[in-house]
Image 1: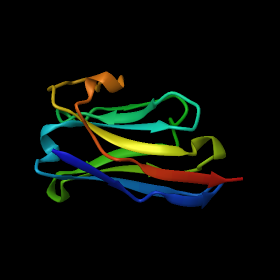
Image 2 (image 1 turned 180 degrees about the vertical axis):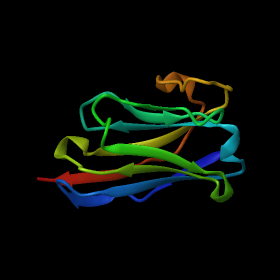
Image 3 (image 1 turned 90 degrees about the vertical axis):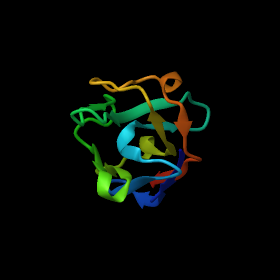
Image 4 (image 1 turned 120 degrees about the horizontal axis):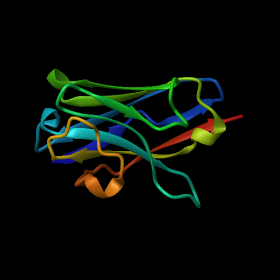
Length: 125
């Protein structure tokens, strides 16, 4: 499956963006989907993830209460709604697919087999 992120851009601090993760060559409903980000000079970190079973969701501590992950199987899309954005959220955001059937989302990048190319999110102060 090929993943494609969209929706990134430049936003002021306190603003919102919604990222989308679409797929070609596969059905996203078969996969748990994780959102990761990587800022310059920093390691890739998990933002959050959603399982295909029961749609259980995990959020990283830095985004809890501000970001929301959802999936629309009819549209073959997973979303990352980002509110109250801060300059520290500036990074390239990636979606990734985990083909293991899990009840609890995987939180490490090595557990995700398929990756998108990333989309830049820049938050100005």
